[in-house]
Length: 339
Image (cartoon, rainbow, N blue to C red; front, side, top):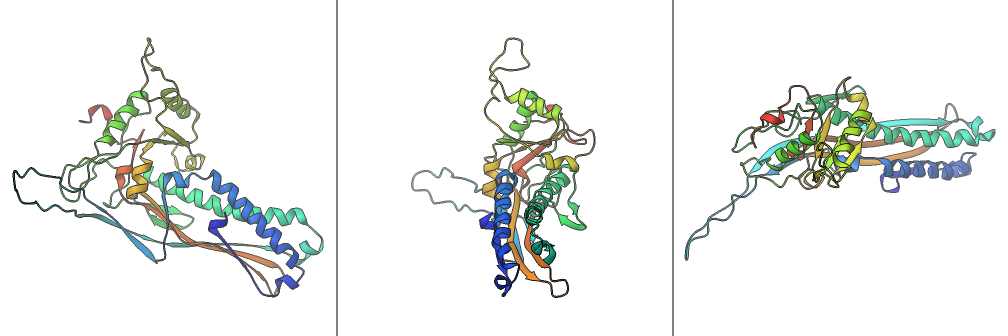
């Protein structure tokens, strides 16, 4: 985690009994951070960015109307773009700390010296992962705000509705649209949901370039089996003559165990994502205002070596069109959707 970790220490520590443990502890922090960063799926589910502001206003732009026939020597028509819905993302401050006693150093408790730094950085990365899952979990539950560790976070899309909703309204022109479907996962439902996303329109009623490429599910053995049965073979699994399965080899599957605690019992939600659209237009946005800062000091009262970590980041949803969800009560039946 070298790119997301800043270490500082108080003056005089190198000359103290703690001086010899500063570099090893820093190494444990960095190694643990690197390991967790490689396993994290946040980068696949959010547009990850940085900021130097208290908060950032996100918006979108409508598509241009397009070229028009004007005949010989015809005048150039004036085209343009309009601003879509806006969404403000304000950055939250996150803190934690741990302490190493002087006795631990004096007695050479090296195992404990490794455990605490490793646990500290794991807790930081787990917090980020859990927060990301809470953001998506709140959206799956149809919420516009989600509570996480005693704080409320705004997770509404830029249009003010929950990310997954049956009545997303374009800002300029066009009919309402849905990205919330009731159908349980199946080969047929996957194909219909994909087609529905292909036909998502922008705020001025122009078809966009939405092309889902990722399936996100919680850790559910039945759902996992259904997904891989649908996309894992080049022959159609539901036909006796094994016709060609056009879903084979087209999907990236993310099984996110952190989602499980945010899924109600009996629910089997499945989400389709367009990762390229998300990265281009910012559907799910995560910004780091201050990367993790860890500093080491001596507590004058206890003589303990105190390590404190501070970071600022936040995440929310902006353009809802990057994703759709299935298996949700109250969603639109894909069979009745007019494409």
